[in-house]
Image 1 (cartoon, rainbow, N blue to C red):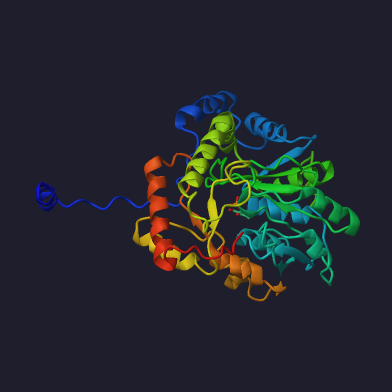
Image 2 (cartoon, helix red, strand yellow; image 1 turned 180 degrees about the vertical axis):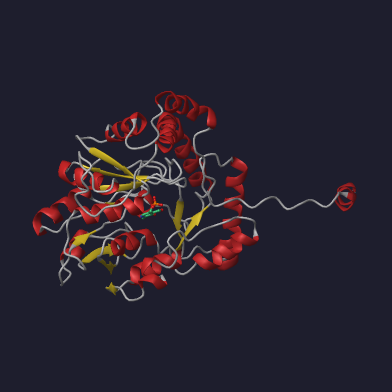
Length: 386
Ligand SMILES: Cc1ncc(COP(=O)(O)O)c(C=O)c1O
């Protein structure tokens, strides 16, 4: 009775804010300040100043073998310039997975080439080199994409390149944490939504000094050691201010990586009793990324997303219906894409951020519990998107 009275006389409670699907966090002003003071002192603001040089060196030092890092305004531009630097036949087909973000295909088109959409492996969500080797038709290049930051089999892709002679460029946009091998040229994004971000930025990592030099030249008006513009190019340099944020982010990376890991572990633990929800292999235990894309039962993504939204939990289908489904790419060549179509309907980006707290995680778990129970009751269905 007392409880009833307490509830009925309580002032109306505002609904708690929705749990956001992402809450990017870049270095604080305090962390960046020492670097800003260096800029003030040096009065060097762009064009490969001391901070950018240091950022590139520190990024290169993360690789197992001697590697060159070329920073670019963003990863989309880095992919475009790397393709241009590879001197591929204009209008050639670049094999890429349909299961990727639209940036991969835009970069191909901007480089004067054509996307050729191929399906992905249902276990890894990535291109399979053996399957690509069986395609019939001329391939100008292949872009394997690291699915949400997972690493493809780099040794298998190197073997593919060496046996076929087809150039391979890895779209490792979300794979800052996992990429430590630049035996194949690879592009990483430093966008604010990534595990290590500086706002807008990206880099090419490569062991090929000639490719690095050509991409560098393309980022700076075609200049290479003189004021003569030697090739058609653009301006895609990062400023010293962007480098300042990047350096502060690298200073904080060892701790931030552990924080990403901790949040991922807490989320995984909260969903232990839910076999219908599957994580990418190694996600949050062997490697970290800034998104949490889970596999759900066949065709369940939309209905689960609607139920979660009603319970105040935001979600995102980060790659929509697959890259091939966007209007811009309607006319592009494609193989059978049934695995991609199934993944698009059975995977969902859950809320995930570096400082997500236990309460938010509990809300996500409870909302998922509710969504899955509403759809399937107590009998868990088959999980399709593994
Ligand atoms: C697979 C993939 N490639 C490329 C990009 C583009 O990166 P950026 O935003 O740095 O251009 C993204 C961005 O999220 C991506 O997910």
